[in-house]
Image 1: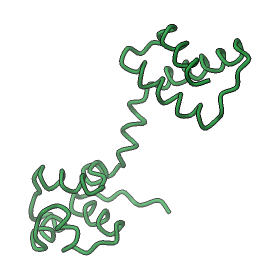
Image 2 (image 1 turned 120 degrees about the vertical axis):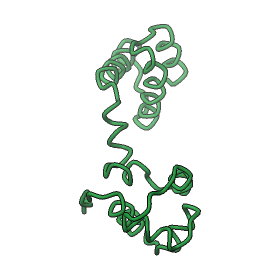
Image 3 (image 1 turned 120 degrees about the horizontal axis):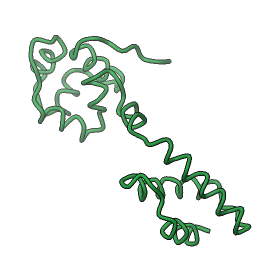
Length: 138
């Protein structure tokens, strides 16, 4: 079931609390505030500080869902360089074919993540680094 994006900060905060199955006292404690303060946040009569959001984040709450109504994964996917992902995938497939090697699918997934992290900053593949990483993985 897809959750509905709500409009106000307080509504999104309340929705997140309910998704976690917590009452206002319990959720407030996660954020380091008392129940009356939590009630004020959910009623949009008080505004939390960054310490509150940081405490909730440490407890596993998704701050982006509270702030924007969209989960953090939404923003990560928007920032992914999908052209680089495809290029890496193709390079790994080509290397497997050229070297007559088949990398285990579970290992391949982790390998693609490692390679993406290696090349994301420069946005281009370093052939020497790619080859040495693939040799280690095979």
